[in-house]
Image 1: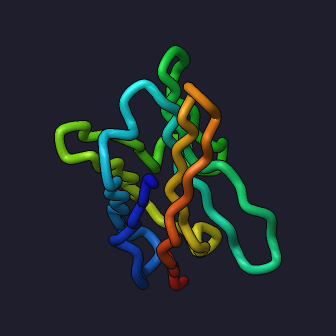
Image 2: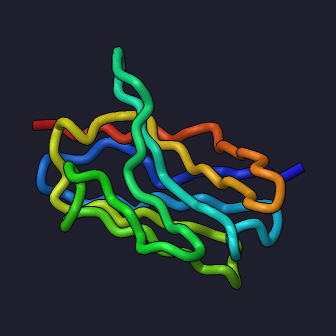
Length: 117
């Protein structure tokens, strides 16, 4: 069973930066779809950024130019660097992996990001 554990969330002022980490229990990222999603209170969960094995990295329009998703396969960890944070970025952020061999879908428990104005 794959486990994903997010960390790095917290409270930050608008304009600040945070780096989220998602550590996997095994080598699950390579060759699979890896992404960060977020869910704000009263809103649906939305895709923030994703890395696909055979397609360009995708970002939500609202975070383009501010957020960067990267993978360190040696550490089994995916990161989300978030710069120029805005109050509307406040949400619970979730790490997600879709294993393409069987489309198994794995989620972390989420980490809270709060951006104050």
